[in-house]
Image (tube, rainbow, N blue to C red; front, side):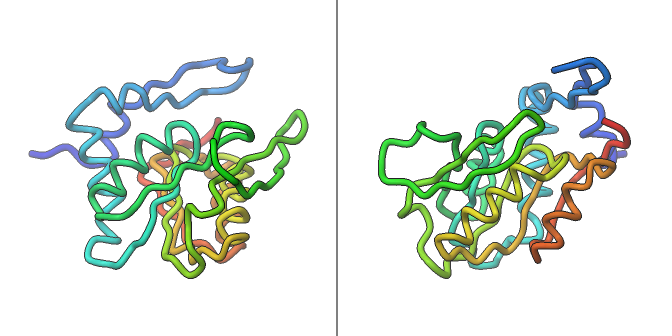
Length: 181
């Protein structure tokens, strides 16, 4: 019998206690990425709802969103657009500031990464408080993207990130949830 998606992903994701600070349970997907069967299954599940649709671009948030987003883009025959921390992209960029627990940061993308009206799916490994994903949505909308969905392998529902994106009118797809953080 084939293990459930949840069992496959739970077995492939490592939890590291007290990282990056005491009281945090860090959900590490590097073990999932290193497990060919689990990685393939996660990508297939992220792609499935959008197969056969005309998706123009997948936008991946630095850094694990690059790995997942690149694989999703390949499967959907879509282009890939990196969303990076300020100062990492070589061409003209658009930028948005967002709040972190300890201050402000900025993320950016190339100004020609997405054309107005292009259909885009945002991808990252995990949705927690939603601050980074919310900023990515604002950035994509700033240049006229039509955001069809935001997809994540992991949801930490207690932290409210999903609700923030849904309040912006962005459907959220996650594969597995972890209570607590």
